[in-house]
View (cartoon, rainbow, N blue to C red):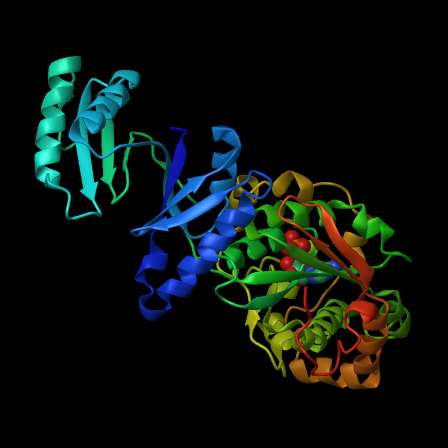
Length: 407
Ligand code: ATP
Ligand code: MG
């Protein structure tokens, strides 16, 4: 029989009444992550049995990015009679290079004529006799697992960790402020790890979205799509904002711009069905991220503001960025990044003062202006563009509370 994969979930199993929904979404996500490889994903007695046409390397790489998976193994499904299981166990022992071993049987079919203990004792004795390997129950070099289900047994000695977390799509949609820097991609990844679907919102200064579309911003969203499935990127130009606020107070500029980004996100959220706004802020990493300045960002928000990186050090964030493969892209040059620079930003901006300039500079009207100039692009899990259009066309009621956009 062709190799298959046994995929185990952990935390999702603990979710009580919601469990069937978590399992359903995880099953869909596994199938999506293996798209193009003719995947078959079958739920069997508390685990998934997955068949896919790709190489082990390819399937493994994709499963390692599917949140909700605790661990998985490439397995050879064998028949249920003891002689067949014994042969498969001996094969697994012989192909391993260990000197000590343990057999770990698990029966999800409790009607099987041998108990787990019977299986462990008889299979252990066979391995010892045929290979000379020694039993070590506490610290074995090789663990040979035997899963007995109703229709098959699975024998395997490899175990690959999955990314853990919860299946993407079980925790709601979040509008994520995405800069192209080091932090915001990691923050998006952490949100996905807890089941959220981020919709990426990027503000750019260039006259057209081309520069942003050809930049690391798009490349990063594509990498993140390999963890989260289909993704949507919304690009908003802020040249009009800059023109309109040119006379504003210089030391308030970063706070005002960040408030403007938040207001734009809030205006878009209802039409997208987003229930929160998120950022890559880390407490006190920059002047714009002091507790006072974060408070002035949040002031008056109708939505919760999520900051998954709040308590992480830069080194820790860089470590995560490397592991999830966004770090090198973050270092690529992209001129728009540092468009709003102030030499001496205030570290304790008063919320009331920001409110006052929001009114004086008519930011709510500017929000509508920039939304009308936005672009929406969506990607599939392997990063192909599914749709690219003017935001006003795809979401004509972006600022009104309208029906949830179909992304
Ligand atoms: P990052 O590495 O995510 O850019 P940073 O340390 O450079 O973070 P800032 O540039 O102050 O910090 O940005 C803080 C947060 O504000 C970002 O993580 C992101 O959520 C949001 N942000 C900043 N610039 C933009 C932008 N041009 N478009 C959308 N969001 C932005
Ligand atoms: Mg930045």
